[in-house]
Amino acid sequence: MPKSAPSTVNRAAPLERIRAVVGDRGMLTDGADLEPYVVDWRGLFRGVTPAVVRPASTAEVAAVVKICAETRTPIVPQGGNTGMCGAATPSPAGTEIVLSLGRMNRIREVDPLNNTITAEAGCILAHIQEAALEADRFFPLSLGAEGSCQIGGNLATNAGGVNVLRYGNTRELALGLEVVLPDGRVWEGLRGLRKDNTGYDLKDLFIGSEGTLGIITAAVLKVFPRPRTVVTALAVVPDPAAAVALLTLLRRECGESISAFELISRLCLDLVFKHIPDTRDPFGKAHGWYVLAELADASEEGPLGAAFEHAMGLAVERGLVVDAVIAGTEAQRRSLWRLRESVPEASREEGMVYRHDISVSVSRIPDFIPTAAAALDRSFSGVRIICFGHLGDGNLHYNAFVPGRRRDNPSDRDATDVFRVVHDIVHRFGGSFSAEHGIGQAKRSELAQYKSALEIELMQMLKRTLDPQGIMNPGKVLP
Ligand code: FAD
Ligand code: ZN
Image 1 (cartoon, rainbow, N blue to C red):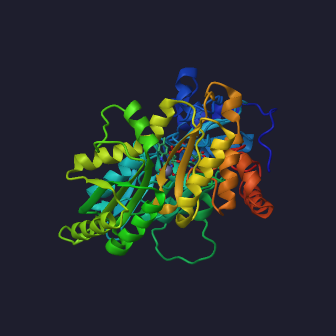
Image 2 (cartoon, rainbow, N blue to C red):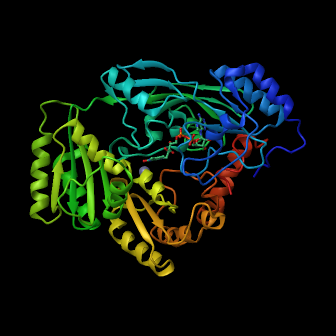
Image 3 (cartoon, helix red, strand yellow):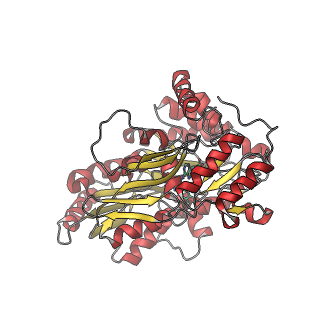
């Protein structure tokens, strides 16, 4: 892997040159101002930076990167800083600038006939959703951090979220990109085409590359007809196998209208009720497993409601559903979603949690859950498992609290023993140790452990080709 910049470079000179490009408004250097940019959302990674640079245009990003290339100054691109793997946190060495895209937050174009939105990288995800709704369209990317994560970060991590089942990952939602390359040149790939087989698909290199190959400055995104009929239900299921059977049944009865299918274990809800204000159990008593399902249809008078009721009737008959609440209003729908989306926040409040973001085939989920639970239990007495996630995609956040382990103890924080137990089983099941959150600095050792030597070699070749000086987010992704 290319080495990061040598430590002999004069750091003062690039910073003054960068200030001349972005102005005082575009540069933070005071300790207190830097603080939010040097710690990750989970509070697990802390770095040091001489400056946070906040360019306001693609031309400014390009000029800054050119200076960095000339002076071999390493750059950490940063969006909303909500990532789960420390990918946007600078190293403790204090040599890397943070390049924050937050000021590049314009929607450049909405084209309802082409069903596309062109947005700058620093647009907050929720603002893009709103811009789509204003044009009577729907941008389906949706995740718990949508009020603060940015589309550039979503693209750079190929974020998943709750609607992947129907609309795909961020990769499937992007038609074109504008990218500042590590030498400061701008790749103008902002095409809104659904068909374009003119050689290698370059945008797919940058999507999911976690800022290691270039800086995404804008994207053309797909939008869809706005759902007018939405059915949201929280169902009690006897176990994960019943949940998978319910998904199959809903697919048969309601077709492609299923947009979200989330599994939630009781322990998740207990943490939400404990730590998140104004949340309550919609059922009279506790149950072991829940599914939050959402179905949506673009037509107002469609048969979706009837089809869903019929499917749920069958599910109850077959013992797949024990109880259910169906949202009757938008407020009720939001409060059901809040239960699901508050699980990461509630877990963070509870203490240090080992977060897994695994995927296996949907069919193997019912076997995976107890197998991993038994293995964790054997290795870590008293372990508590917070199992929830995007069951429809075979993606679970299979998180674990280990008694006595604390965030403020570095050896607990850096321990990989819990990962190893879970990821070895994932590997045996033919799954992925990082389904949607990426690698960052948190999972580099896992990449080295589970990716083949050939895959790692190909990734390193791409890195060297695009970023021969190794200035773009060094120390991330590659082992
Ligand atoms: P950051 O954290 O700022 O950066 C992430 C990576 O992208 C870093 O490598 C950074 O260098 C790079 N980057 C950022 N912007 C750019 C750019 N413009 N060009 C190049 N590289 C860039 N993730 C999911 O996939 N699904 C979920 O369901 C989900 N739920 C979440 C719920 C909560 C409560 C939280 C806190 C996080 C959740 N996440 C989820 C993780 C996170 O929100 C996503 O990974 C998100 O896409 C990160 O966006 P960001 O703008 O915060 O990026
Ligand atoms: Zn998720």
